[in-house]
Length: 166
Image 1 (cartoon, one colour):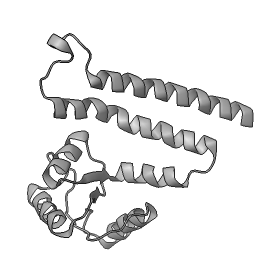
Image 2: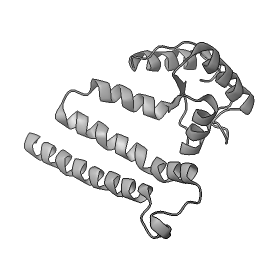
Image 3: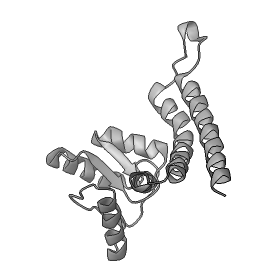
Image 4: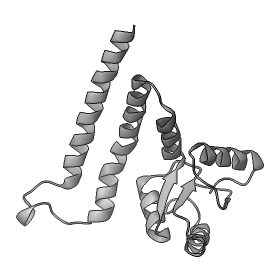
């Protein structure tokens, strides 16, 4: 899914190829990043039908989507949805060779994930209360703290690798 001009379509196809994924069909829309799906609902339905008929396993959207948009589109299509930012992180992750580069990519991935954790939990859990009788802890809070700790650990390792290198 990308914008209708040929330059943007070529760039989107190149990103997909760089991520070692195969582009089956390119859908275009003049305005991406609309509220519910990151595209118009008619286009989302068209993609849903294509996924159903073709057996595609992923939908890649050439735009940064919110957690809600990804969730809605995944729920509609029944397959994984990857936005432009996630696709680029995947490309960098697959090509990183040095320890420092791998740590920098891991840090970027954690930063990408953090804002999505709470939103995903809110979307999937509804109004349920954590633990027995609602006195426990939300899984999202545990995941959020884990990501924050991981980010601190990566930053420390990065500082160490920069110090030893310089």
